[in-house]
Image (cartoon, rainbow, N blue to C red; front, side, top):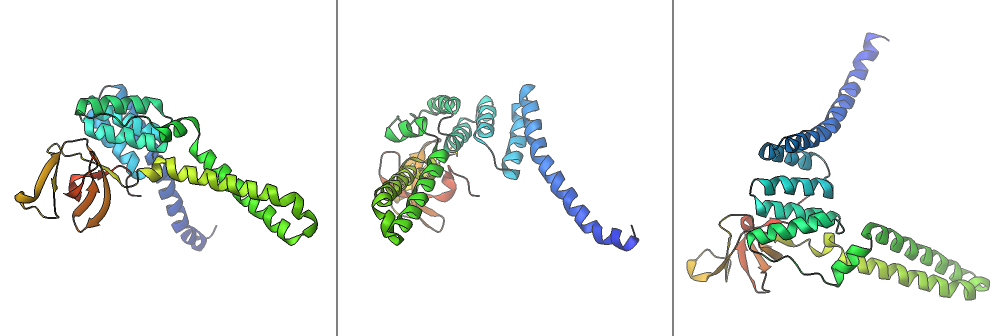
Length: 253
């Protein structure tokens, strides 16, 4: 191989090496975090869990392990947030559900009660439901098109195509109603040990203060105006609070 060809290949080799190194670092961070947990070094393990979460797409299991490490050093609010994120990725991850219940109890909060949404998510895998619903809808749409174009097959295909479209749309609508990746997209958790001060108006005037939300409280952010968030509090009341007082339950990509 000539020197010229070697020089031309050098940028490609560097890019491949960097990509491989970056991929390995994700696994290395997680391995190091788990090793430190195994030796009881939970505080130092947290830093490696955070690096892994920032560098890669975390799984429900990783968030669960992260939450366990946080709970071990007394960071119950951060642990509760990690357990919530685990359940958003996998609503049927029952160990995370039990851990969230324990963390909320430590913070003085009650965990959300089970309802029809949680009953659905606990029984049906959401990704498979979404895939099946989309497949049924597009198959129904294809058969409907054939039925409309062909008079001979219309009587046979039209009922089946309509049923498939309705079933597919119904499955997708159900996903929209129950999937925590959709239903909790506006939720945020108060992580500050001092809580979050709630005001009647977007002003830090003490005369406008209503209450202070305790650490671990969940709020639903409805609108934002600069640093101010207008949201729904745990009791259903709508008021204003500063955005730095609450951390989104679903992290930004």
